[in-house]
Image (cartoon, rainbow, N blue to C red):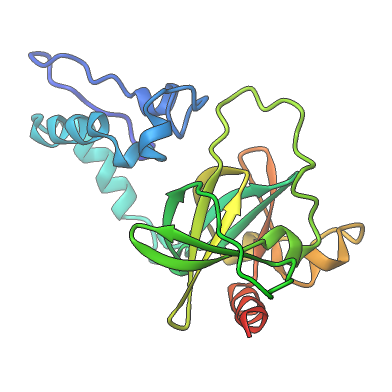
Length: 230
């Protein structure tokens, strides 16, 4: 969420920024997250944003934004990439937001006869459209049953719908963290000890929210999933 403090006029009740305490930017204990997936989809945030836009603008707020807009363009545009962060097994991974068409609740897949492919789990109905469900863990050589013992927060298993060259793929993930923005220069090289099956699909590793997130090569992932459908 926006890290700029919310200013509220004296005659208005303070806005409770619950998204920073119990929401996606907090400890993720809010019961609404199960339904909305991210705070930006929740009516509480929408109502708070509407009230915030209607408040009188104070001099401190104007001065703060003036300082931001005076920054050189290169610095303001440093975070030029965005990814959706999720977990499979013990591995935190990310795909570019440009290739993630949607996020859907988990659903059982229907196996296809005569298709003994460890990566192809079957087909699944997502928002009225039947698409292939693929195991990203199988492709990357990750044990999907090996998860963290304690996370101290809610876990959101979901289906990520990957869009690649006109084809959709439903990818089951064990947990969903949310969107992360970063500068391309911030990516680090994968550790030498990383799973080699996973390592060849990574463009780099991103340090984010106390996690080491493997950023996946969307083009390579898309080509491999397409090949496994043939």
